[in-house]
Amino acid sequence: MPVHAAIADPAHDPERDAAFAESVGVALLVVLQTLAPAERVAFVLHDMFDLPFDEIAPIIGRTSAAARQLASRARRRVQGTDEAPDVDFGRKRTIAEAFLTASRNGDLEALLAVLAPDVVFRPDATAARFGPFGGRRGASEVAELFKGRAQAAEAALVDGEVGFIVRIKGELRVVVTLTIVDGKVTVIEAFADPDYLEHVDYSVLSS
Image (cartoon, rainbow, N blue to C red; front, side):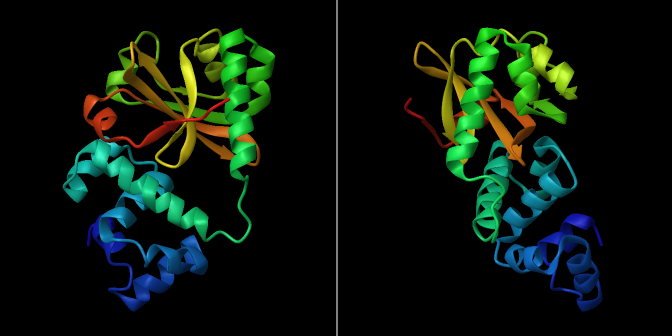
């Protein structure tokens, strides 16, 4: 059975269910079973198997933008049941704003201070075409990439996650989300695909 089929219906096979519970944790499995099948597949394949949304989309019969939103919705539900959340929203916002300030000011040391050593930058295909914005891994590479940038960026809540957006003449052009673990930015994802931008839910965070 394909992995996505097993994820979509984790209770289908008791033996497989037990193995899956052991690998992801019983508490998480309980939460996963409350998700709709498409949400569960999008969340697990992306967050646990690091599969890009472009590959997840045809599996669940949605666009990549819709797949990302499903995963984001599932992630919020999973995090909402966490008994000990990693970082509260206020702390995440502070870290996101520190990242933006350091980026605008070209402060390499301040950027390194908020980035995890193994941070990953993942742009979608459209964002990757905006200058030297290919994928990067590691704090040094990511910090160098963002040093002196983000001049027009605004801190925002994107699909329930902290990040920032770039608007040009009022038109949304780029959305960036930050995944924060233990007070450090571990994943930065940039999206400029028009289909995604048309459906993304965001709100600018007032200063």
